[in-house]
Length: 208
Length: 252
Image (tube, rainbow over all chains, first blue to last red; front, side, top):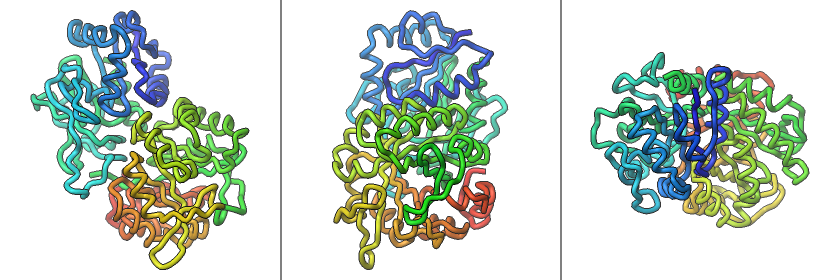
């Protein structure tokens, strides 16, 4: 089995690499690449993302053929893909960070700034928060409801179809923090930085 | 509900953990990689390395420590000390840091904060403010590990770096650092009430009630401490149990 972490110069992916390396050891081959050919032949893909929605989308578009290869992988062939943080947010049709920017359009919805209720809630939402599991998700196998995950973000994904939501977290409102739609998985939190429980989520994805 | 974070801070000098009093008189407190792993296993919510020598010849030492720690600690790592250039940040992030803390370079040129947060995202840019009381309700920013007075008002500076894209403020009271007499609550309140980004309280923790005060009175989002953890006075677990018993939300 080949698991590929997409390296598209979206900022810091060292922690994603370290955590997947820890989990994958002796089980699967891990590749970190932006090589379109390797991505097409992979079994699973991890799409990380840091920085702004716009900068991540721009970076994806900068690599020739990458968006099409990801679409073929995730939408046509329906192979498992995990988006983390802005990696998840990019599933949306549109994002509003920096400037209105078109997303991948894989799960209908938008990405907008968390309502901080006139300064009542500090942004970014940084730190450990509990997830409230909304539906069974394959990546939540053996994960207890109200487990703590590490968050760092100011924008939230608001999907049109609420049935894709697998978990929410409470910060000014119920923020969508995990989705599952067929073969598409996404977490707003950082499993790679969420201690042993986060590694378990990565393990669940790797074992799918 | 978002939990208040406990962050043990490892001051690193020439590859060893040290802890000083008012930024001087350093004592040895062990191997940084081992310590980081112990804290991470013990429930630390984040780990902070501060390279207190931070001269150019020592950059490789801290990078090596970060690289080794990042392979074993799966909680966020913040690294500060001597972060002056975009290249410094790139090197630390590539080594496995999740956030970098900028101090002197942010004071010298606030546009550096803007440039860094634009390039790497606000989520990984922490600005460390070292502040000293100059009169009642007035604090001034110091740089170079507390050696240089800048004439800049700490509250004004905090607002400025927020506007420039900093994701968090690491606020150290130089008057309290290493004294074990508690955070400077007035300073903490002044900064938390005038900004909308999370503030990490630092400097002066000597007992667990000081941690409680940091959240309850100072409104800190996160609590940084060094010596109470390094010398085994309290474990992270004990600190969290105490905070929990006082009604402060923590990750168990």
